[in-house]
Length: 462
Ligand code: PA5
Image (cartoon, rainbow, N blue to C red; front, side):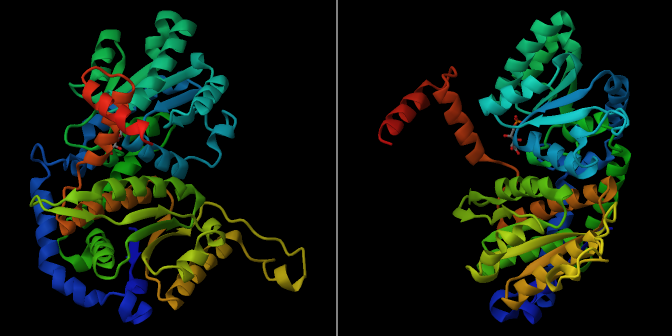
């Protein structure tokens, strides 16, 4: 299993002012945490609680349909193109970047075991959209359009552009090149899919975008490029079992939720940095940033009181950002807790040859890059604690579907527990909806005329 080491967030290491007396806090919060975990598990099957993501590891039916469809179509396509944004893209990006061979899209078909290349279009920058369309042969491309609401402007505008091009190039056959993942019943994409006869998969009810990575939203693209989704399901199930333990001393999601919460509310650590020491985990930070920010950044609590809560998540990458952000983390404001992710065993070992005897670099010869990267993770952690900067470290034995699923599921549960500690709704996103609605108004969507007028007036003052 993955592990959590929180010693460097304790007063014994980073001092009274910036550390927590973790053993005492665990005792103080023991019954509250037990109550939260029991309550989440009790509520998870009830409609309207937005906790269905806690059941995704057991969804054998989706697993079966995804595998069947993927095995039928994946040999027919050279490229998978995923259209989606936010929760409909970030989980897919995080997992494919971590689990596929590095530089996957540059490998030959043989090196990819004849699985397709995969591209995520999660923005509407006209230059990158048209740039990608120049390199993709749409006749050899399967488009997976993913949107729970079925009407997100970014995703649907991409889809409209691409569907139109496909129809021009492929005639009526274009339908076989589209698979839609959307709500079971509602939304424009559901309507279009039924009218046009696309293959569809469902974003389950009561699963928000940022908690959807283990539904068909993620599983389908993963299976299409040959990622072992059974291994992923096993990782979720084992972690779910571990996190059902209501004892905070045995539950790493509860431990990290409480540590982050207390650091924010008692020790003024309003920033939470996610810093994996592995390039393959780079997009896990992007995924975490959305999960933590969108779930916990709220202005009203569960009792209707006005609050402004939430830690600001920041992404960093070890060792790269040691040469960019660590100066600030060590010597700037002491307002952060750093979450390191460390990988014990990499898939490959790269030896550094003994070719120079210069004093400044000779010591590197005979070591491995693996030793160097983990030494850098350790030394950064120690130097931060010298400056009384708290950190926690999550260790993955290696990067594979089993441990990655544990990691992501652990963060989801951690977020849900933190939401309860802050006493806010971790599953809505009114702040996101507001800017989506303003965009609809500015783009002339029917029903948004009043907002459009108000926005035009405001913008004329800017
Ligand atoms: O987590 C969320 O709910 C959001 O980030 C959504 O995933 C994002 O806005 C995309 O929405 P949709 O899937 O409806 O297109």
